[in-house]
Amino acid sequence: MTAAVALCGSLVAASLDHKPIATTTVFTALAVLVMGLTFMPYGVRMLCYDGSGNIKGWLYVVCADAVGLVVLLSSVVAGVKTYA
Image 1 (cartoon, rainbow, N blue to C red):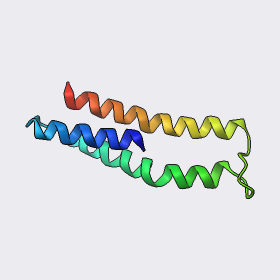
Image 2 (cartoon, rainbow, N blue to C red):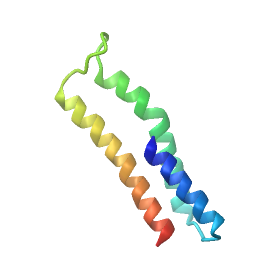
Image 3 (cartoon, one colour):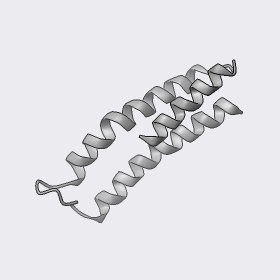
């Protein structure tokens, strides 16, 4: 979620500086927002935790971190393309 907010902030800052923003960057930002704000909280809770609120195992921790890493890396790539 932090990555999505940071990406949106950098896109707003770039637009205020009158820098052109590529269409692919905007679509990447939208994808990061959708994934970071909808799938991550609910998907991880449904897939990685059992009914009593305990995590199912270390493999689930690694998978949840990997999905979070994809969101973070896509934010970084889009942010770098904005300021490059």
